[in-house]
Length: 363
Image (cartoon, rainbow, N blue to C red; front, side, top):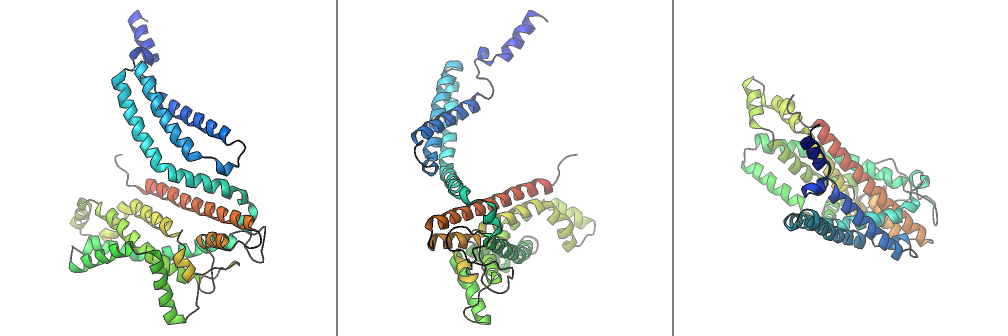
């Protein structure tokens, strides 16, 4: 190996000799800053409960420390100009971190307070005949899944067919414009109005006092349909017209073109929109209080009787703490943590489906 080659190899191996920070230095400094601030606040909170740990201040000051460190280190190695560029990048990243602080605080608080009751009893028992300690949220988990599944079965066909009409058949006509207007209005209605609508409809047919999981599913579908319509409409509009024209040129009818060409091409985005719509309504409380009501027992019959859901379970445990307030509050936090995990699983499933069903490009 020649001397020049050896010098070039050594220069590449040592980034400092080129006046550049080694790859990964920024991430290393960021991790170190967060760890340092985390340890500082841990020592300050060492005699306090874990729930009192100030994770917001730790993350924020960690981001500030990172911005200072990256500027100082880059100034020494790369010069002031590159250091300023890295500092501005760090400031933008810190601003993004500040925007995430409420979410970080929420997740940390729910996790710390809910993990104590995150046990097997919580997922295998209901609150039937439970006054103080013990009990679980099996009846609420089952009710949430049944009501949300029923609302999805109602909302997806209606929302998808509406979006197909708007994109493929509406042609910006008066009816299509009217549908778009009312869908936009439905998107912004308060959830309590959807609950009142479902309650009023069932009072007309079954009389006052009727309550069931299906009534709650109707209320959720009112909130879910406009989300499905808007998301599906946008995905259908992204399908290139060339695909439709190629199908028409082969003599394929329009309905079959929609079924065999348009929908398979946009199925990934449509599925993602449906998952997000489910995540939107699964945490609703007000409409379910009016329609599905609440109960302490497990109810598998969605057509009759009160049915508990996780949001209502959390509210009920907090509002009616019984003889042991600490146990009720622990169950409420555990229910909130369960609901967050369900929403997280739905979002991860949406990303997986979008990636799996996305149209393949290239060979």
